[in-house]
Length: 421
Image (cartoon, rainbow, N blue to C red; front, top):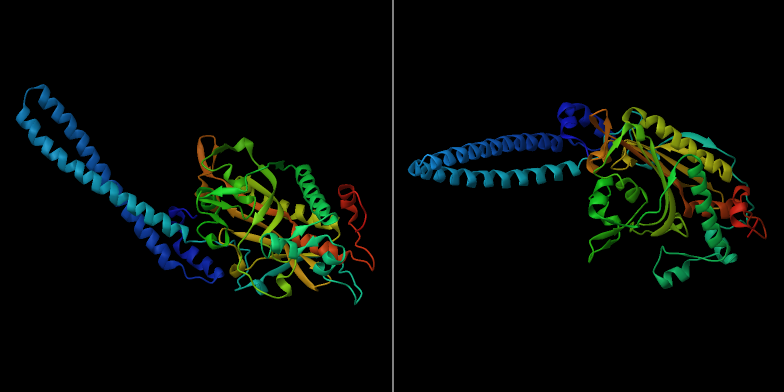
């Protein structure tokens, strides 16, 4: 969430920057400034009314002490009027603050200057590519057929138990999942990220704090009886550890990692691009989160990008990095880099990670501040997938397939305990 002061001081600049997102937001920003002015005016009126009430209370007390009850009675009538006036101002102020907050929640983050203009994913800018694309035989199979051939992932069984988008991993398929999770966590902890195990149910305040609510409300599974949401990513519980916190500058950077299953109600569609593991409602993911001082956050973003690069290189999967354009940029992000791995059997790129800097957008919602020698400033928050498993598994199965087996990447063999499926 943007600060009102930022909007007031940079109205034209923000309006221009938001055009990268293909939105004209000036009228909403002007409404925010107008509502905030109304808030200030109402707050001033309330303060004056309360001050007058306090002054009258003192005068009434003095009249009673001196026995001038008639004068005290006259002032009590006036005090009653001021009490009613203060109540009205207080109710009006509460409504204005609510309106202001709702308006602020509608405004996405300001795109960084590096964000290219564009309307959709086709306008994203490729900035890096690594690895050679495997040359498979014409008889090569996509991962959903390989999963069936080797009986390691059962999509129909998952459909029977729950529904589409909830696969069952079996035998070496389940062990490959566990191996990847442990490998990712080990890589992250060796890089200085502290491991956490967090709840996968989050409350409304947590969803609002990191920006999933109200923006992505329809994409989250909701438990009405308890007013809780299934976490769409470990980013939500991890970052909310620091909601309403003041951290010392000496404690930074704070680097966290966690594995969780993730749940997303994304609208269904049909075709090979969403078949098999390409799009799921439940999937496993290992996340990294950082809390940084503002002046260090973009250096930290580059470190996170390099870290994910290293993981994919060790897996020997061909990948590319895209800088997302304004039209494809997430609501909360200033700058995002997507990692895509090439699926040789499907002959297409599959997104496996997003690494983003939110600057102070989340921390303003979270009220997460840094104490810099008595001066409190909003922290910068960052997060990234390191990594999301389904499409990594899909690409390993497809890219490492042979005529009669699927090889396991060398770096994973100590984790799987086997060299092939």
